[in-house]
Length: 217
Image (cartoon, rainbow, N blue to C red; front, top):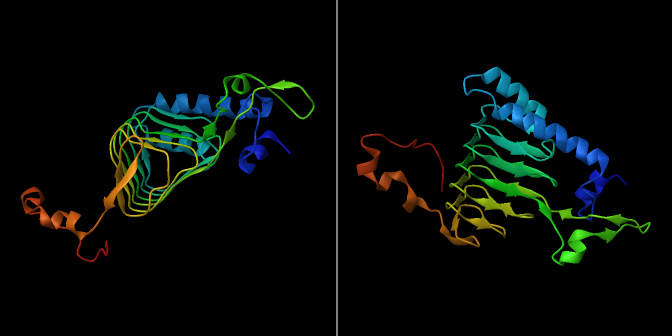
């Protein structure tokens, strides 16, 4: 079993493995290339995004700078908007649905290191050799989610469709669909309902309207 296969199995793996280091170096360099592009270099950006990621859906946009650890372990759906300083430490798989919006400085993390400092420094592999190990858990984000600025999503979390995650939150547990959640640690505060519709805020709508054929609730 390769070290990459161990990641997907959810067991200890060695992040210093040469094959893993090569994958990460490629992603780091491509992330740097993307971050150095101008916003109007759309063709160059599109080509780089496809090189970095396993999937980058039609109509999606990354403002940059961005940082992807493995890159090819991340799938991003269609029409996703990603603001400044998006960081994805995608040792394990990261899946993002369609029509999501990410504010500035959002971070998604999948690796987990041992809590005991001596184990974090060194452990023994099956042959008795000194090794540094960690493990990782995948992150799944549904469609139509909105993340405020400076949100951190921790390993193993699933966020359901239609959620709003408040700015500065640290998401350590699953969030049910159509929920407003916030805090450190992030907690479900309430369900998102028809009462949240802009229909009830005519002073902000200012003559605009919502699409009545959308069945949101």
